[in-house]
Length: 323
Image (cartoon, rainbow, N blue to C red; front, side, top):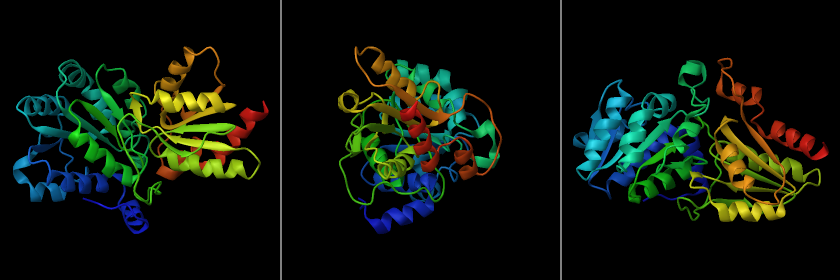
C-alpha cells in the first residue's frame, strides 16, 4: 500500500501531518469499501480533498457542529460503516466530549475520532485552536483507545491499524509542515505496543507524537556528555505498553516523559500513575506544555519557548541528573 523509505519520508515531511493523513485515508479506503470520512467543515484542512473527489458518496461534511458530527458518525458506525471523524483537537475532544463519552466510550461505536493540529501546531490561530488538554480528556473516557503517531510514516501505520481495529479510538496528530521524520524504513507497528528506538540507559525518554524526534536528538546530545539515553516511542497512550515501561523502570536512573501536551493529564501523568503502584521506581521528569494559556506565535517559536526542542530537553535532563 505504501513504502517507508528515505525519499518518501522526506516527501511526507514536506507535506505535513494533515496532508499525510489525507493520503493515508485515501490509500486505506481502497481496501475498506465500508469506510466513511466525516468532517466538521474541515475536509480540506484535514487533507481529505482527494478522498472527497475519489469517494464522494463516502464523505460527509456535517458543518461546524462537532457534537452533531460525533452523533452522525456513531449512527453510521451502528449501521456497519468504518468511520473516521475529523476536526481540530479542542473541538473534537472538548466541545464534543460528552458525545465522545456516550457514543464512543459508553456505546462502543466503531468511530475513529481524528484530532488535527493537536498541541500548538495551529500556531497563529492561538489558544482557541491549541490542543493542550485533549489527551487528558480523551484518556479519561473508558473503552477509548488513544494513539499519537510519532511522524508522518507512523500516521500511515496508525490509519492502517485503525481501519482494522474494531472499536472507538482517538487519534492525535501533532506536528506541522516540515515535521522531521523518525522512520525512514519499515518497522513493526501495533496498537498498544511501544517501539524502542534506543535501548534504555541511565536516562530513558518515554515520548509521544512530535516529541519522539526531539527526544532522539536530545539523547544524542546527552550521549556526547557520557550519559546513555534510551528512547521509547509510546505511540499508544491508552492502553500503555506496561511491558516496555517495566523494562525502562528496571534500567533507568531517570525516566523522562516528553509530550506536546499539558504536563497535567497526558503521557507524563499516565506513566506516573503506573509508577505509583511500584515499590521501586526511578524518579520521573515530566516535560510538556505548561498548565497555562500562553502567547500565540510561530510553531517552532512556541516549542522553543516551552523547552520542547532537543537542546533544551537535554539541558533539563542534565539539571535533573545533577540535582
